[in-house]
Length: 282
Ligand code: PAF
Image 1 (cartoon, protein in one colour):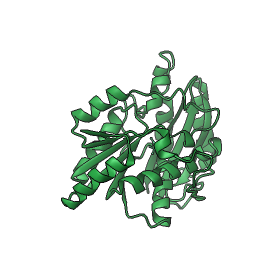
Image 2 (cartoon, rainbow, N blue to C red):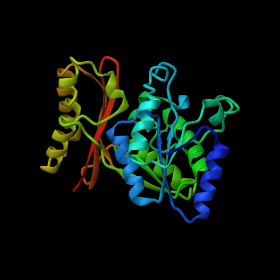
Image 3 (cartoon, rainbow, N blue to C red):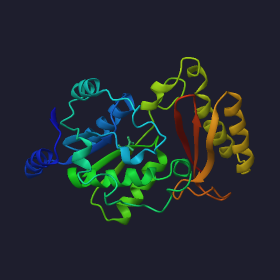
């Protein structure tokens, strides 16, 4: 695996690969790689000849009171994991490489659709930080395909919309949620879950699946279903950020005759904010 810290070096190596006729797959990450990230890399390898992974903890997408400084940084371990799956290129830039003019003066990419609801409502500016850095990374890597996890369902929807709206020549590939045995969706923030909380956190996924099954069974009293799910999560000792039943395409509250529905939830443990979702087709 070749490691690049600078845009110029990465671009030169990618240019050579392109000249050799190779297709390029891209997996943007913030590091602290776990099995779900490795699945994204494997998926990119299935689609493309050469895979680039980026590791960059993007301060622009963290709120002032959020966990940017505490976000786990495990570079040596991450590199070993990527080498073990034969990742080709790793891009690990400094902040000054990505934001040479500082973050305040950085040109932003704003996607007005779907970014002020759900995670966007409790994390103002978060998606602007994501779309800005992802568009920069797309411009740097110029991949044929980029792989994103369905776990961050709203992020995936926003990025798809950005790519469509800005005519970006990249295909977005969605990879399924990777879960622990009890259903907990894998996430770098799971390392903040305490041993006391761990046996109870699967309540988020269990509640999503319960709502999904009720809708599949014919119920359409969405407000009632969401309220029951919230109560169940709260009774397990967690604060609910949101629990919502949405139209899968535009993330607006689902209508009774919608055929593609996604149930999304976010809850706070003592030191982490966990998100998850389950989709259904009727
Ligand atoms: O999903 C993430 O890890 C980040 O939001 C991303 C896409 C790497 C952008 O910083």
